[in-house]
Image 1: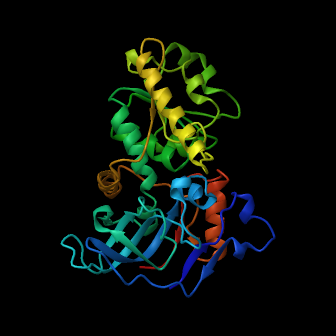
Image 2: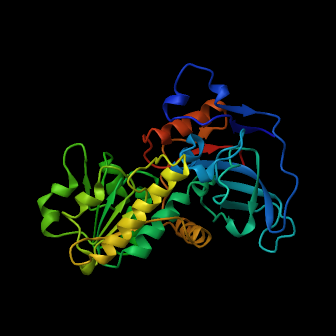
Image 3: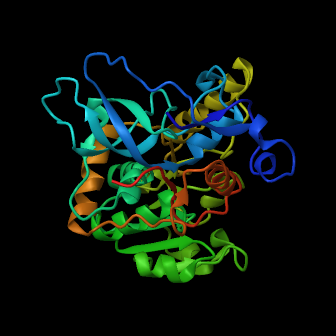
Length: 353
């Protein structure tokens, strides 16, 4: 089958934007073996679309030791595909178009065929495109951040309002959690306003933590989809204390692309986040609560966000048109996400339905 393969770890976006031998890093192959062996509760799909997320970037850069795969490997984990072998499933049949992720083993999506665990798959609702279905994983993260940590009537600030997670978080906060006020940081004011933001802060022109209005009337929840910049420390200026319900939800952590290539670095990375969460829990009178958001409830979240997409209360925004399933198209997708230049989800159209 046709598939993209990664042959060595790379630093994005520079590694895929040079004039060197890019095929030595990431290439399209026509002779990759098609999966033929299915275990119980697995299905085989013909991939129609595959989206790229920051997790995929971490994967191909080799940042996370526990995610390392033997070379060559096929990148991509969030897909929309047509079931071609239901393998006796009671939930799906051949011909069903499903949305799924291979998150526990985040490889395999940039190929013509992919094996999936059926409990991770949900039928694509009518009226939702293959590309937007494949791109809903970031909305699951947004759903967990908003629905589980904000309350109806809260004032919410979303750092990074035009990215994959942020653009969904704005909509979920306004339409499903019924937040009283939603602000977002972004250079894309028109997009964020259209999604429902009450105010858009251009971080190039003003610092959100220094705005006097927010120092006086503080936020209940800040959701950080950007990472870095000591944002938790700065959030104390405009975020309520934990005793008053103030919560800082870190989607990406202090570093959006952490270097956890050794066990020592891995332990330091997670210990810092866990330590901060514990410390702020012990200081609720003076500090906002800190939450390091880890993936959870993916199957339940996928079903819920797809229902919202189906009824029109959530729209996944794509970063331009879907990219082609070519070496150049896939490299462009990874370079765009790795370079933090995407406004919305980046997706590759692998095949037509």
